[in-house]
Length: 430
Ligand SMILES: Cc1ncc(COP(=O)(O)O)c(C=O)c1O
Ligand SMILES: N[C@@H](CCCC[NH3+])C(=O)O
Image (tube, rainbow, N blue to C red; front, side):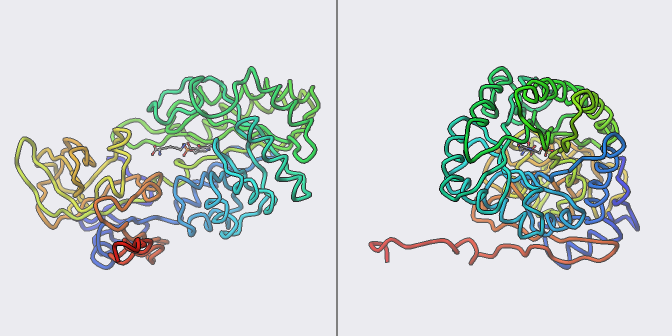
C-alpha cells in the first residue's frame, strides 16, 4: 500500500507525523479524527507554487465545507489562503480565523437576506447564482449605503467523471447560470447601482481525477471573460472553483498532481488574459485536495462476527463518515495496531448505526482482526467530520491535531449533555 510521507509504520503501529495512532486512541479514546497540520500546509503550498509557476496573481481559497474546524481554517489563514464560504456560519469562521474579507467569496445557490446582509456588512464579495439574488443584494447594499463587488456562477454544462451527486457543472445541475445566458446577467448587474461585477465563478464538481474537464472549464470561462470584458466588465478575479480529486485507493494510480492541474488550466487562462491585456487574479477553491489526506479516522473494533461475511463491528459509522454510505466511496482501511501484518482474511468493516448501509469498507483483505483492534480509515479529512451527525443518539467524536510528534485536541467529543443542549420542553410536557 502506498502511504503518503506523513504516514508511516513503526513497530507495527500506524504513525502520523511522528505520533503513534495506537497511543492517540488510548489517550483520547475512539472514535477519533487525527489531522496532520504539516500536510495541510504542504498541500496549500503545493497549489501556490504550481499556480505561481504560470502567473503571478493567484489566490487559493480553501473550500471551508471540506473541513470546517476553526483550527484548520486558522492554519490556512496563517498560510495566506482565502476561503470559499457557503453560509454565514462559514463566513464568520473564516473571519474569526483571521482571513481578510477581500480574500473570501460568499458562494451559494440559495442565500438568505441575512446572508447577503452579512456579506455587505463585512465587505465580502458575493458569487450570485440567480437574478433574484442580484436584485436582493442590490437592494440590501443600497439600504446599507454600500457597493458590493460580485461575480456570477457560470454553469458551463460540462460532464465530469465523478459521482453524479457531486457533479455540479452539468446542464441539469441546480448551480450557476447557463453560459449562454451569462451576458444578460452581467448586463443586469452593470445596470445596478449598489452592485458591481468584478469577477466570474465556476465549479464543475468534486473528486475529479482527470485534468481535462478543468481545461475545458477554463476554456468556457475565458470565452465568457472575453465577451464580458468587451461589454465593459472590469475583472478583478476569475475563480475556477475546486474539484481536483485525491487517490483514495492506495493500491491504484496516483491522483493528478497540483502541477498537472496548473499545467492544464493556467495556460488556457493566461493566453486569453495576455491577449486582452488584463491581469485579474486567478482564484481556485480546492477543499478535498487540501485536507483529505491529512486525516485518519481511528475506530476501535467492538466485535468480529462470522456470518454471511466476516463483519468487523467498529465504533465509527456513517454518523462520523457518511461518504461510503452516501456516494459508495472507497476509503482505505488498515489495522493500525498490526499495520505490517500480512492479510489473513476478508473483512467488511461496519459501523454501529442501525442501518444496513452503515458499512465503511466492503470485503477488505486485512490481518486477522479481533475485538480490541484499532482500525484506521485513511483520507478522512475532507467531508468527514464536516458531514458528521448525532444520528442514533451518538455525539460526534473528538478531533486531534498533530504536528511533528506533538498532539493536542482541536475539538472534544460530544457528551450526552451535548445531545440535549438545544432541547426545549413544550409546556404541556413539563
Ligand atoms: C462552490 C464550491 N467550491 C469549491 C468546492 C470544493 O470542492 P473540492 O472539495 O472537490 O475541491 C465545492 C465543493 O464541491 C463547491 O461547491
Ligand atoms: N461531500 C462530497 C463532496 C461535495 C462537495 C461539495 N460541493 C464528498 O464527500 O465527496
